[in-house]
Image 1 (cartoon, rainbow, N blue to C red):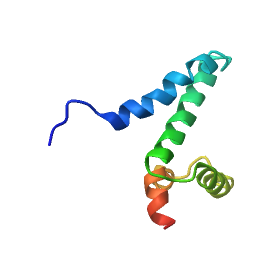
Image 2 (image 1 turned 180 degrees about the horizontal axis):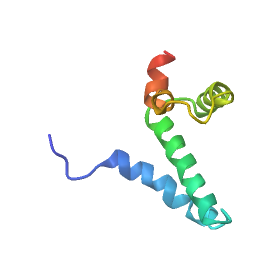
Image 3 (image 1 turned 135 degrees about the vertical axis):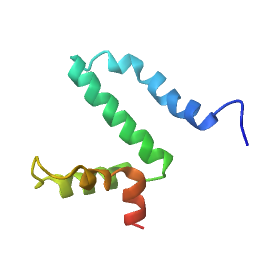
Image 4 (image 1 turned 90 degrees about the vertical axis):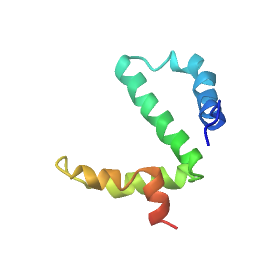
Length: 88
């Protein structure tokens, strides 16, 4: 089926729109980039019904000891949708 709108994406964009005023204070382009990454992670967790606090706590604890040459696939395993399946 093809739909004329995509309510899920529109609802997710609402959070970004509401945060525009706060995003003026990221301080730099690099800060804004990091903020956008965090928004993306938070909204992806919300979309997959993953508890953001539990997710971030687990990911930070797992990656704290990783080396810079850690294979990218290990990072991909920590994406919210994959993390959710592995932690069910």
